[in-house]
Image (cartoon, rainbow, N blue to C red; front, side, top):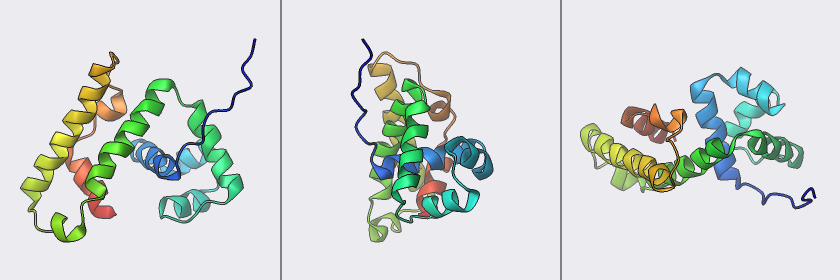
Length: 141
């Protein structure tokens, strides 16, 4: 019997992080095609605009088409990057680059340990991230 249950909506912040991470690994134009959004619409979404209902629907469908491991990777990355992103600017700015990189490396280690604890291979998108990538993403805002 086919389930008619719909998946719970993915939070916009997770969708935004998922798209941002996919763009980092390819290009904005390629991800716009994957999501069935216009280049400028996807760029606007990544810049923080509130998505229209139709845009949100397309992004939800795109997310659902991703494999289970990719979905898990996106949720974990969003959670762990959220830890760094939520550091108040006045605190983050107190740290020099060396300390920011150390914090980012610890965050990446925790994310990778979650996959291991769940008995899953660390997805390539998580394995290839570096502390420099995390700091760069945080500093971009």
